[in-house]
Image 1 (cartoon, one colour):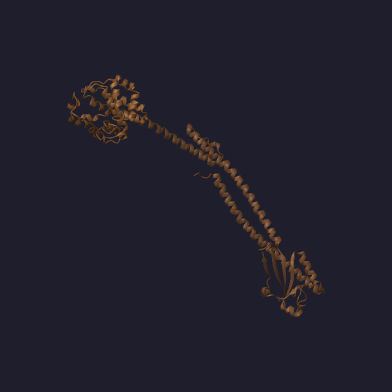
Image 2 (tube, helix red, strand yellow):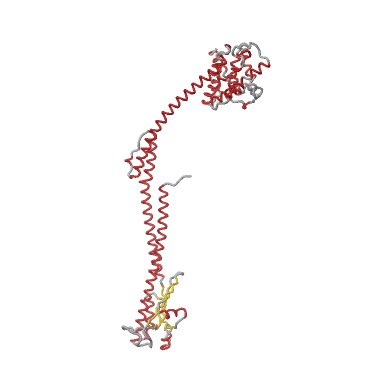
Length: 468
């Protein structure tokens, strides 16, 4: 899974931060503007109430109370007031009664105003328009020009009545929404400005330098050179480049050391492999020295095996292994008596059974090693007398149950034996050898290996001729 870039991580976090910031700030501002708008409307209600009280008092003193309804309507139309009503206290009603439709008595839902002498504001904000009902008490006073006790039979501090107003506050609500919207838009524009600039800063001072640093690091490693740390503007990137250079120096030093060690190891491996090859060839010669008739048999088997493996297109590693392992295919014959080994006639059935034991002796000699070459030699030694059709020995293995190395050496060993003089036989003619191997294809020999051999038989005879 691809991981996000520094750029995308930073932008996501900034967007998340500004989004939360905008929501919180907008909420706070909306609440504050709402409270401010409510306070403004309530102050307006107090101002209108004071104006109405002053107007009613002046009308009373001027003895023009019949004009007060006109006066109140003018106030309502001038200050966006839907309606104004005068609520008279029980005392005033008893004294003067209710003179017109603008005056009314105390209703149960507003009696609390007369009991607490505090104004009451009821807001209706859950409709298309915002309405406020303001009920402001009119308290009797004996001071200044608005003295009430001279006209009313009341005591100072007693509530004469209340001004009941219905005010349309929709414009204040709309103004609050506009201001909050403008502020939110400003925050959005500011956020976009900050994020855009941050994007440019990240791109210029982090993303591009990082990509450049990665490219330079690869180039420096490939060419065994150093990064130019002065290329970078920021201290942090310069410090990273410097540390990469230090790390690269250490790596290059270790690589040089490792390369030298590898060369030493390769040399040692070659030495070990060469020594092992010579040891195995020497072991293969053990059987040869016991019979002058098998002279150079080991050398020919090695060369024939290598050529046949190449024609079969085995891997280079397998060709190397089988070539080294092939010389000791008959190592078990060291345990067979000279009487049987060098008998100048066909072996008896009992003698042949003893001769067959040489594969078991070879297996016992080689089976304890875990080395690849020795294990290959064990398979060759133990299985090179098995036959493709299962009629061989010691385990009657069939087809690909027989190790590929053993199948190759099996054909090579028979070919060399038929093409060489032995104490019990003369050299076979080339035609007779070819005929025999062709007839044994699929019986004694792997048919694929036999076909490859027969298709290149002249090359194999050239090895016999050159190594007599």
